[in-house]
Image (cartoon, rainbow, N blue to C red):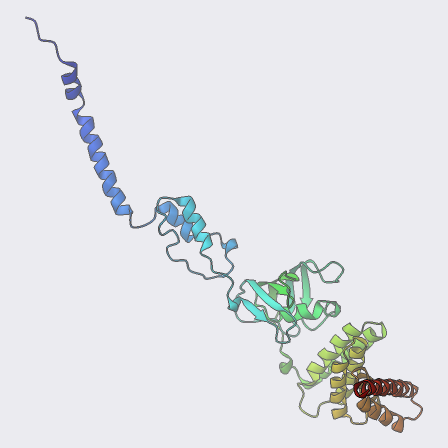
Length: 347
């Protein structure tokens, strides 16, 4: 018996019914799974989004909400968006020194609330100070209130910055009007110190005496800037004592005025002499230096009055005699110039 030939088409149709059904079922399952996952990002994207590189975060504890929203299924793009959502530096990350000498930009916030005080030994990582400034580079130990490092060009500024930092803090020092940092400091650790008000009166006077002596050494060595810093630190210690305070204050103010005159700061020098004379009205060096400062400021009448007081108490004071002679000559030139101006005005 002959059998009728089997059609190739029918054979194909009957040979693959199961795979078609399996493929359709897989497509349906995939569509359902896609719909279930559509509202949120993929696990890979979430992993990238919620764990950004901490070294690239400027501000700590900054929370990012749904960093990969709208970029489902694109892990690379989600990673970029997670980094780009970091906010710019906040005002709370900038600290302005009260005397206006510098601005501290906090890079990494420290731990706790304690900060270095007088006598604290600080382990510091310093970098970026100008070459030849004498400031340390790399890991170093610095003691607040003690050491010749404070007399360097940027020593006082560095000490003020350290006194504002917490343990583990990393910060840049910026000078006013400069966008580039002067240097970077990292305060790794520090020992417990004391505020100046916690010191006994005898301790303050002893520390002030050390600063006074060191300032005099620097002044004689031709370093009025370093001497002025020492005198200023000594005065800050003594000013915390109950009034009237030790008589050494008048001497320190007069010495500070001498430094300020050499540094070309006659206005500050006159103010320092005022404070010295408030404490000791007959202080001849303060009177003389105020006379010099007033002459530099063009206040010739005030300069003449101070210098004449010096000569009244010490007629053989050669420096006062010479300075008064200069003031008289300067006054004559000033009068002659004024007369010429008047003649031109009315001619």
